[in-house]
Length: 399
Image (cartoon, rainbow, N blue to C red; front, side, top):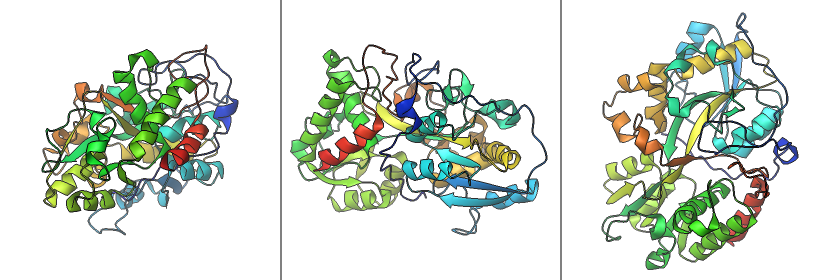
């Protein structure tokens, strides 16, 4: 199982804050530009001889070499097949990943959507020639060339996996069964002291998504593209919710414990948490609410200053190959990105549980993206609130 994924986000947005506006597109649709111009770089047209090593930055559970569990190892077979020795730096936050990439010491990173645009805009991540990643052809179409992993129809990485942020509740404490985020916002007072929420500035998007569906007069089209009025409304909703929060969580093991004990009875969660909690006999269920949900799609990106680019490309292809992608997905607790991975999972119901190939399900998920001043929804008549301000507001929300 994965370790904590805490997104205590960046206060500095580097190139994104200085980026030149050039239009934009819906952050949940095919990318036509995110409102900034990345530094001019070209992807390689061919690969050369492998360099004998590759240095990775990864979420815990993404590059297992058997040291945590002898039965969990997809790094050693990669090393034997390619001759590329893997060195992995496990990062605990997206901010840490961005900082590490700036050092020039790493070749590739498994970036989440709240980091990927920063890496592209700053010039720390290079365009990727997907023709040099044979297994890319089998990646689910809904993950390719999206607003968090491409700019102006240029790919900047290879999709790794995805997950949705669900609404979990105790069946013995919350009745009737909720089908809306209203349970943790407008109705939060009903469960005062027992509501939980994800501890990250990106959670502001969850409030924005709820308002997008329930307060259409605000004009929110993309939960990651908020002008000041829209942003203030989301922050206000979260400050009101704060009075009912028992705990903000970032460690999923602690959330499982809280739901088992009854300290938490309703709040945001992940499918892996739901499965684990139910396996430990906690009376919980989860739902993708009628408003939809936020979620994540991680992307393996190649460093612009990669010293071992050929081994990096070999890793990108390996990590999304059917068998390995299935191994990672099951160990980490997410839907695989390679459609053929579903035939390789040890649990034959895994892909159904994680909705791996459920197109209708993923259309309801608004994947994490990096808020920038140039509105990701394409508006050019207003300035949107950048992520640095989200970080500041999150501190205020929590009091």
